[in-house]
Amino acid sequence: MIATSRRHLLFDALTLLLLVGALWISWLPGSRVRVEVERFLKDRRSVAGIRKGWEEALKSGSVIGGGEGSLTVLEIADYECPYCRSSFAAVDSAIAQGIRVVYLHYPLKTHTHAMGAAVAATCAESQGRFVEMHRALMTTSDWQKDADWMREASRAGVGDLSAFQACIDSRAARARVEAHMALAVAAGIDGTPMFATKSAVHRGALSALTLDSLARK
Image (cartoon, rainbow, N blue to C red; front, side):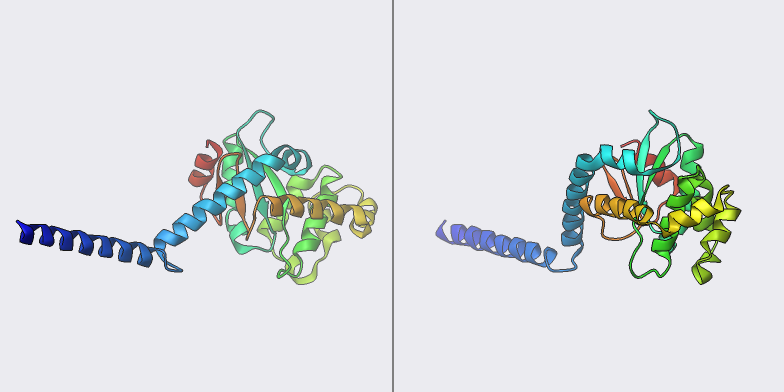
């Protein structure tokens, strides 16, 4: 009887040791469990930040498509970011299905012309041509070589090019981009693109199906 009890104790001790070992291994830096837990916590913090600044983001963001009352997704992106550009078709498809997409500029410092492109889009928006300029910047690359914003404005159908140039040269347009960036930082952005609703976030490129699913969360 005593021998049996000792065997049970030894078995329990070994089981506990194995469990502790498994937990320790699973929590090592880079382990799948740790990565998933850290991602979950990061996303929760982002959702909290997005909820706090949601109304301001909708008020100051640039509407790509979709009407009031539609399912709404916030897109935080950079015109030179390859993952943002590869997601453009998915965003376009979602808009065609009635989803409202509100865009926040987050030009990365590592991208030479990203800030200029964001300012150009903002100035085109002041003349009601944001959607056209946004599409051009996301789907063409000439501007990444020469930053010829006047050419891009003309292609996007901006009517008053003199006013557009004055806007480009002003502090106001850049200030608006920086306001977008501040909202993105409050939402916990750590790279582009980032898509968000008031209850969920998606980091990185996505498909039309994933975007539709996110919009319904």
